[in-house]
Length: 125
Image (cartoon, rainbow, N blue to C red; front, side, top):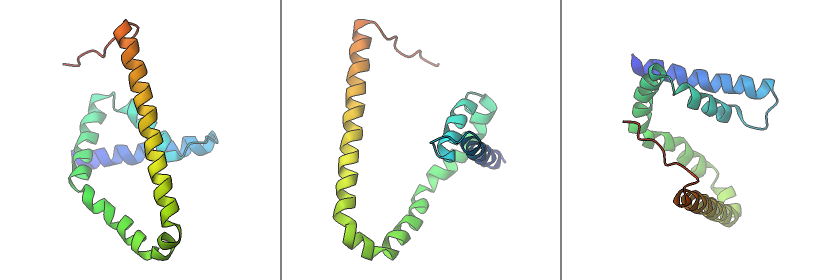
């Protein structure tokens, strides 16, 4: 029963994200706004408990979620053969950019922490 309540919370956050995104004409997609809303909702222990159960179920069956993607790739092999190199290049470049930005931010925060400008996170236990 907790799993169903968790899925309900997830769908509610996504729906609210869609409503907020469209009502405010935000440049962010509704599911992204829903994730931000869920981040705040997870501060409530009751919500966190239910969503945790639903997340465990989703993670246990994560491999099944890749089946539609595989079918989509196979149904569009002509496009992949035509644009495959460009897609691969875009994926590689964007991955490297993401890694580089992450490394720069990590080094910056680590340097500030070493100087004492940033407090380390408190231990939650």
